[in-house]
Length: 143
Image (cartoon, rainbow, N blue to C red; front, side):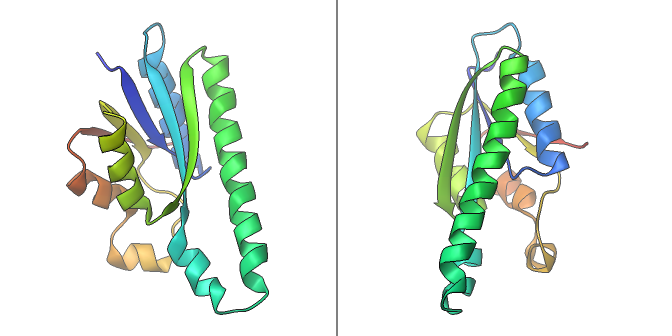
């Protein structure tokens, strides 16, 4: 039913629930699960004005991305599911939308909430923005 499933992951409990849901859907099928971690450029840019903090923040964000993708990949391997893993920089909902179009994604499975701060709560969550902008089905997973 689904050839390509996208799971945006930030390492949160909610996004790990999405990884598990996607793996369950992909089990026993010729489906590829795409794990995507987006390093939010807004976070990097706001730290950029802080001098020496920016390189340290960039390194920390890259380490968090690798850790989140490692966790997702480990779960996919345990479930014997085909997967790809990618890290990109940008505004999360925009990068997710672009990735969906580039890879002809059939389903997006994402956590209902992730690691967002006050700004996201005031402006609307990444999940909400993805729901409104992608041209494919979206499944919101809860832990």
